[in-house]
Length: 323
Image 1 (cartoon, helix red, strand yellow):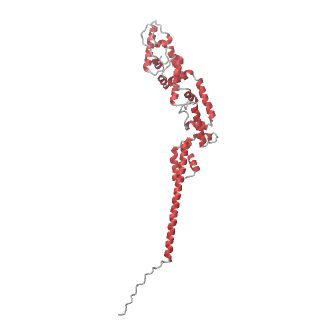
Image 2 (image 1 turned 45 degrees about the vertical axis):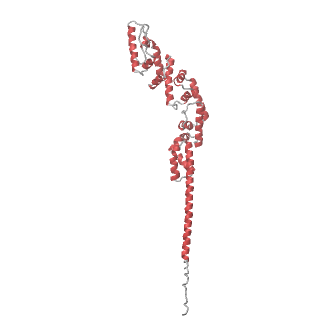
Image 3 (image 1 turned 30 degrees about the vertical axis):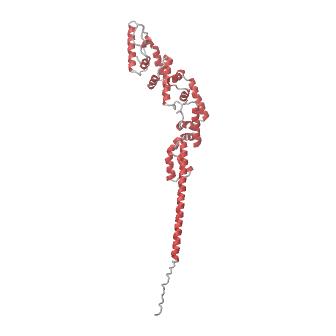
């Protein structure tokens, strides 16, 4: 038998991809690359914008804190992060139109109306600081002219630190020329020194309500010392001041008390109780109905004794406000 011839199957030859498919793949890869590049660039731009926003916000926020306007941080945050305003000049310009800013630097508006140049924020705050330092160095009390509102009129009026120093000296001069009884009573009743008194004379409208009340009480108490030799208590003086007793009313009342001592004391040979100094003050000035009634009763008794031939002096029968 003849040998069989074995014929092997031919190897499969891969078909070549069409050129169009290769070009499409290259184009797709190229597009994907560019998209990745654009995405990376966009992310970089977004990060840069985030950094710029945060930087602008932080700078303006620190500035606001220095101005005492931390309340406006939300306003700035909206401009920076929502309205995308990053230019500091624009931000400051927007801030200067805000009502809170105008209140904070109200002295500048007064200056403009007076035909004066407005101060920069730095100049404004530096002047406030100089004012405050002068006040403290001069011994004026804490709480007197130590806020931006306190300095508005000074800045608006173009008052220099030197001029303010002269005004303070005038306040101390007023203390030295003040009624000595009033000054003494301020010290005795409240341990108030020259600094507090100078503040009161420098600007009574800016003095604390407590100091104003104390000054009025001391004026009343000073008349007690001068007219009747009485040193009334702080509570008595404040009660009279609250009742609206001024210097003239105090003078007349204490004069009446001084002239009626025979009425208030017990007569020789009698055992009646003496009307106390506290009752005299409360009765004459009308702050106690019971004290008034007691003085009226004593007056009637003494008049009856006088009419019966007693020795009660006629001038002692009248007390201001009780007859």
